Amino acid sequence: MTHPEPSPVPDPVVEAYKQHVDRSLIRENLKRSVEERLEALMQLQRFAEELRRAGATLGAR
Image (cartoon, rainbow, N blue to C red):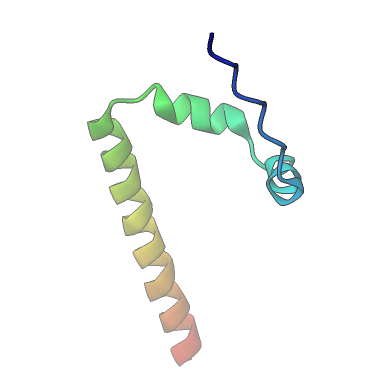
């Protein structure tokens, strides 16, 4: 007869971080295909680069 594995004890640090995570965004992202997720990531990278350029332009003034 096999014994069921005991339930893991929740890590208080992980539980504290989970309070601030919007799981609905994770669920929505997981509904996308891999290609759709990669395209969204590339768009985010392009946006981040645009923000860096804008910041550098403002810093040069």
